[in-house]
Length: 232
Image (cartoon, rainbow, N blue to C red; front, side, top):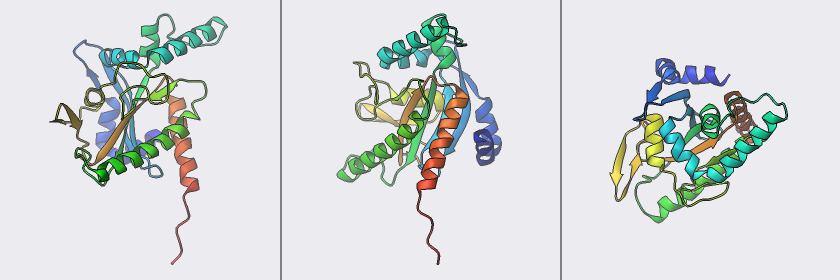
């Protein structure tokens, strides 16, 4: 169901996204499993990717304590007879299981600027992301999930560490979007919303089909909660 909605919304571009496989400087493949799709109920656009080996190393460092616990949990489950693949070593486990989900929300303000209005909108967009992520995480069961904190750069929901996730590098690696240097950092330009866009990257070790079902379930629940349009 999710695949068909992707295909309808993106026609030939969506097909190209689904088949895209890029290589980073280390030569490890990165795969886009689902192209960008905008949730009507949450107004959150997301895509699903299997990160390259180079980016995977950066992700592992940021979320190391909780990913280590997830790895040990699945190893124990496999030892007990559960059918779990990719647990021979931690690196193989992450390559086989970790998914990156860049999310974007359209904004009214140019979020590269600094003002009270921009800060207020950022807080509102983060609150909406938390609602989307909370609804998705609730449907992922025992599978690990987290996000990069857009304020501090560490784990947003789990155990924070001293390493900061480079959102700019992650987004440009996964999506190949353009970016602009601003101050000591930079901003990634959404192809449609440009600087009026709020990105946060979500991560999980849930199987792709489980993640799809969780996203669709969260979307359906939010849509059902929306007030019915008033009759004229």
